[in-house]
Image (cartoon, rainbow, N blue to C red; front, side, top):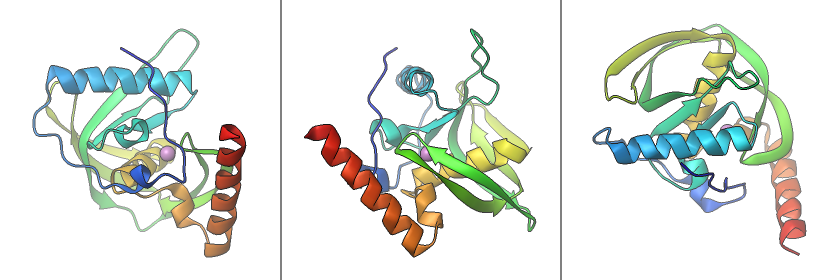
Length: 171
Ligand code: NI
């Protein structure tokens, strides 16, 4: 297990469309462990593999972290099979979009299917924060960031801020 650096926008790798995992092997489970380590180190609640530069359809989410208690859940090849007409708004942030938070509207409830870390097919119905988090992370698999859901003006302001922060970091 290892903590890997998290890519931050703007970075063309974050726009990549990730590919399906063909078989859930030890290599994939090692990737999941690295993703969880990297997510906890950065104090996040969700991470997509592309955020550590691996273009595979793998997510790790942990919404019930407590001190000394970690419950990371891996979602491999996740797909939304149903989304409610009812929408919900959450203020979102992203480890790949540091220091920026904004409201994003998404379906309030979803049904999804995915493979677990043993390669078994699972289905779930989610609402609340989990529904939002899953949709946010699944967006990453298609090269989409939450700032892509904002108005053009807000998005361009966000990208300006991110570009400036990157320049300062490398100066
Ligand atoms: Ni994100």
